[in-house]
Image 1 (cartoon, rainbow, N blue to C red):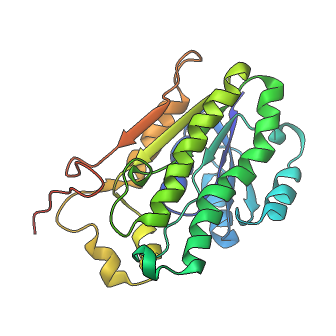
Image 2 (spheres, one colour; image 1 turned 180 degrees about the vertical axis):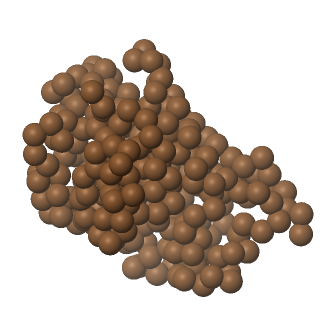
Length: 251
């Protein structure tokens, strides 16, 4: 029987690439995101490959999360793999000129959103004494860089929560993985620069960044290891990147 996987942020980037890849393997999918039109289109695309459910909600809203997850019926409630992928970066201001609404967006989505979803999925895993949680972090959760302040803090929190989950859930045989990508070419920079396409496009010029599909392949590898093996903490960078701030660019 196919394992049930719930993916947050499935409408773009890493979440979308992961959904498309896992659909070709022994998994059925619960696709989550805010943009219902994109979720429906993805469900239609993948229906010939596997069973899919769509849940449209904002991870920042705890009541929406609760209502969506409680709407699952039958064995769809038995989520065996949770991929906490939803996340964002807002702005690139130094701390002294940062905007509260940017801070709130990053903390609410990257940290509290992860907690809200996990809160409703973990009890089923502990009851069954099995499961796998994958939290998508960032190199920004390993290294702080100038003007990264709150975004880095939110991803450091993801790293800490991942480690804490692994400890707390160890007695139940639940795997917990943190995947921390470097520069990945997705909508990430467009969101960070508030829709400024010209500025966002400069982030990925002069070198070959990671693609969302690269992270999807890593996730597939992670969830197909034998029961006794867990990739606990993985940092993945493009070859051109040596750290959060060192990137070899041929401009």
